[in-house]
Length: 181
Image (cartoon, rainbow, N blue to C red; front, top):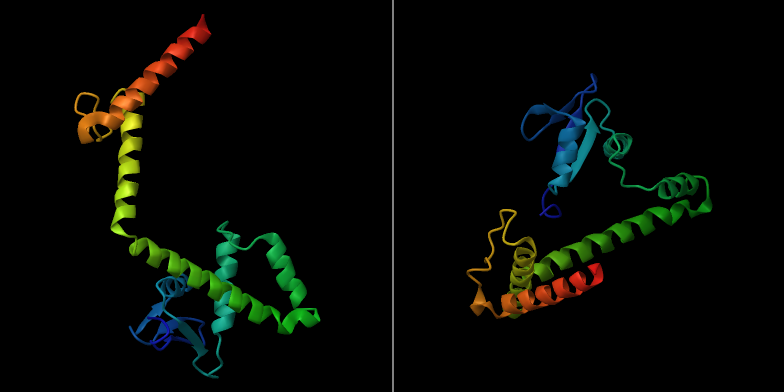
């Protein structure tokens, strides 16, 4: 969606206030960060000179988040970025970072897509595993802790799995009692 839509134009006034041209109201850096998190591209321009200030403000947003303890960038990455400004590698660093983030976005969207397109038999297998885990936890806790799964008195799926778990639990209890003696 962000690729087909024009960037949201934000104008910076001489008073340094930021003005959203779509909604005709003033916005903060946090508002701009929210637009970006929602998938919207932004462009921030100086009203008087027309200079593009987008990079400056995006860096400021990152710096504020990093200073609040919301660290995403490890120290070694920040150090390497600073070094890249003083080396001949400067020309390749932006391309490398752009490609790395593009690959990250692609793999993330493919993962989400694959989870959405999971075949029904795999989904049923996951549900069955979840039911077995719930039954096991129920058996281990004696049906307490406010769980909503099947109880020992009303086993789900004919109780075969629960019966197996009960037998295993009884065997473990016997072994433990032997160790205590």
